[in-house]
Length: 204
Length: 204
DNA sequence: TTTGACAGGTCAACAGCGTTTACATATACC
DNA sequence: GGTATATGTAAACGCTGTTGACCTGTCAAA
Image 1 (cartoon, rainbow over the protein chains, first blue to last red):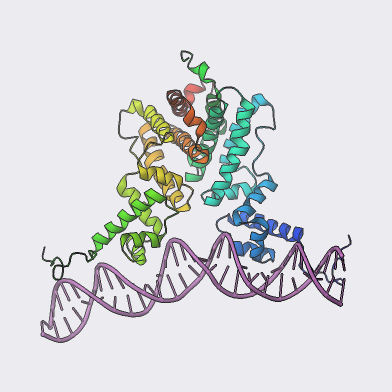
Image 2 (image 1 turned 90 degrees about the vertical axis):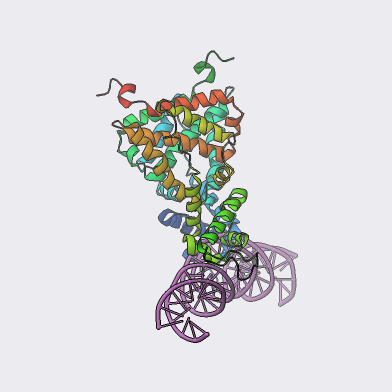
């Protein structure tokens, strides 16, 4: 508190200071990414919206992609579907989440970023998150000899459904009976998780 | 043949002419995309490699993405997995193709473009092809009441496997016994294709 | 042969991007 | 007060895909 609030009481000086500007940039970027998507928002646009110089984005976040990463990290855009909930419901939770996304469920930021999913920046960030937030913990959670294979297959189904949704709006999937579709996706996920030894018992 | 070959016999004039330049650009672009990926190759680089002015790319192909589209169209990068082969083997063919891709099978151009799949240009081109070359014909081929749903699910599994491959190299999947994995993917695809009425017989 | 039209090719610029560098300024400590 | 140091600024860099104005060679008609 040893910092004088303003140099005399002026109220609209744009709050110099590391934390304040960082927050301002983050808030503006998040708002703009949500309303316009990632690729459509340039660094200069973010800076201008935040009332801040362009160079500060790179000063504080390294790059535009770094800014995005920070937003995703803070915001918890990637739900903790694996850790939160009963283990035996895992496949069901994943299936419901996946189909829910088909029906437009999710935070505005999630939905908006889905539309920008083609962008290389998002792609690389998502890739890192996919591994760290889905495949790796899922593999650990599953355990067993081929845990990583099962986890990768689950990830494949989830990603695939998401991708089909983005490609053609997945009109057919969305038009179909939701419970039936969820059941089918659940069956797919359970098949991904099924032990190999159990499904091919004549194998060594 | 009424065109004099060269204005006196000179041999290294760079073959002026619409078709010739078009071909030259296509060949250079294909070679460069194959060896370096799509995003890493700029218009100027293509032009320079083809010994041609940059502006001609846009003159003849509208845009860089248009050039890519033309290459994909001519090259048949998207295999006709659905039409070619016995109907009853469809799922097996798709499964083997999918796993084959995991193991680095495919034309150099295919493999290279896979690495660039994050690029928005590729994304949009691929999206069109996915619908026109996979989902739509597959739905027609399948027929039945929920053909489009089954086709979308198949596309989801195939896309998902492809995507996981790109994300983390799919080391786990590649390390796993190939036949066993193919069998599992085949089972997934068959589950996608299975009638809804048959799988939930207690439903209406 | 001269003229004119025109397809084909060239050049330089445009507007935008993310990023960086050199500089100015305000803050905090000695 | 003086000075080191954080913070903010302005301008440029190099790159991208793309475009419009301008040559130029070729061919056809006069």
